[in-house]
Image (cartoon, rainbow over all chains, first blue to last red; front, top):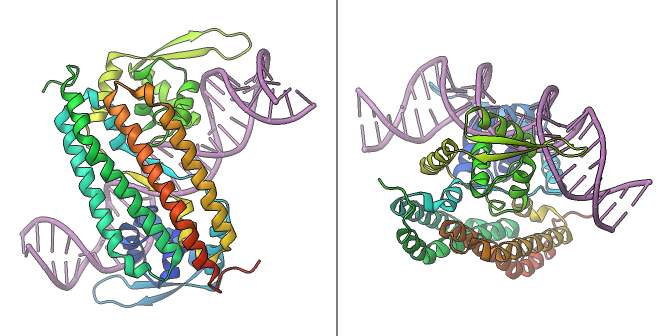
Length: 181
Length: 181
DNA sequence: GAAGGCATGTAAGCTGTTACATGATTCT
DNA sequence: AGAATCATGTAACAGCTTACATGCCTTC
């Protein structure tokens, strides 16, 4: 999904500024499967406004740039619906961490150990975050399905890492090929 | 990881042509967490050769372009190791499917049903593929850890979808707001 | 006093995808 | 006959990230 559609998605939940939209992608319910940066959001909103998908209301602020509050128009709603109805592309998943663990035997077991522990903690934070949103999602079936799937995946990943961390490190330590340092 | 490093990773397993490297990213052990297209691989290999990270051996072929077989040099190995030792970036996950399911209530329940069934089948194919590679990975602890994690995640996702598919569709069907068609 | 949050916007640059260009062989 | 596989490479284009530009307010 392009950033413009992503913005429409956030605005379908409530009016927001560009800054707030970015926050939604960092913390909100989309956070675990879509993201966007400010440098992409602002031009996307300008374009969406030109196309009549959103309206802008400027709100004067003391000492700061005007706050521009964007709202979805009916044309914007229609565009969002159209995006939902087109055949979805494949999921994109890229992980530098898995790449590095793949070559674990080239590295120090201690480093691998630290990387895994850190990742488990990150998964736990994600699970806590998604669990906390349970009430927000209640009554919105699609939103709750996606939230639950996120929990299920992160839990499975964390469990796997907890269970296989030890055996992996044992195997690495019993090898001789790993870095000296 | 940039495409150049990805190529070094494949070449660390065995010598290969650009074409074969792409196949490794479509089917091989990296497939579920890294990908690369031919249009990126060929220039990356040329650059890696210029930098002395790989060597090239051209093999004449009848009626086809010469087959260029690339091999990793010790400088290339060192570059791969360095990439493994730098702090890994965050995982990138983007899913158009989850985006669409998020807005399930805007759409026809039948469409959502089809999307979920299709995705479950895709997960099952991934699991079968990774399970089939079990023997290839035996004895390579990092590789096997990553393979197992893939299985665990896809299994959890498929299970969640199987269990929550029915309840989701029921909720959608009992709503009035969904598209008419 | 420094860091971080609030608030917008531009532009350079990187990276990668898709399409184009070419062409034989093998499978259906 | 048509599609897929093998095989390389270029180039246009898209899309996004990062850094720059500006500046106040609040928290540590």
